[in-house]
Image (cartoon, rainbow, N blue to C red; front, side, top):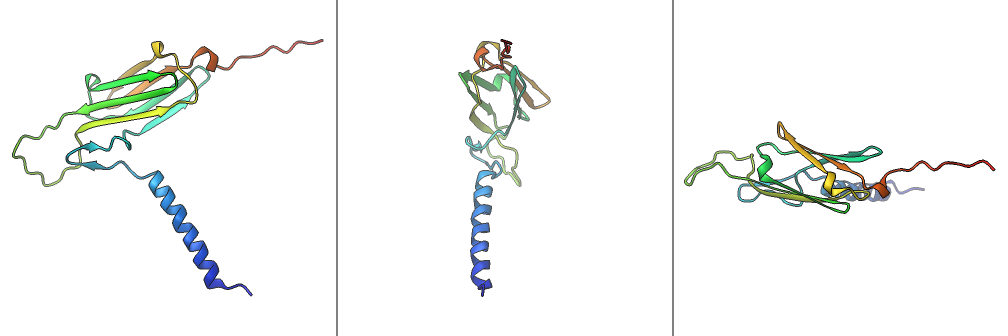
Amino acid sequence: MLNVDNGSFALGRLRGEVDRLFSDLFQPMQSTASSGWQESRGPFFNVWEDASCFYLEAELPGYRLEDLEILVIKNELSLKGKRMDSAKDGTIFHRRERSAGAIGRTIRLPAEVEAGKVEASLRNGVLSVKLPKAAEAKPRKIPVLSK
């Protein structure tokens, strides 16, 4: 005979552990009045690829190109930025949800890119980066010979 109470407890505990794992993994970016976005959690990226390039998009409202630094080394892309605080000394906030300060994030791409050919643009608060794959990372069609 199956002990339902013991089985439900084990399943509940397993579900709790899985929920905790996913909530830690996908925890939303947190902001604080003093430091802005946590460097390890934001900004958030969308990254995809086609046969010749990787593409990256990041939402960066309120940033200007001169506030951003993008570095590419082999297959790693680093983004750093700083948004200045518009509050004056003595300001009393009733609600503060818009962050200020430094952000930074580094991601590893599946293959190396040609750093000298990377293109970046910022339009309407969205950073778009095109990262051409290095020649050795691009797919090559291999001819099949008949004998």
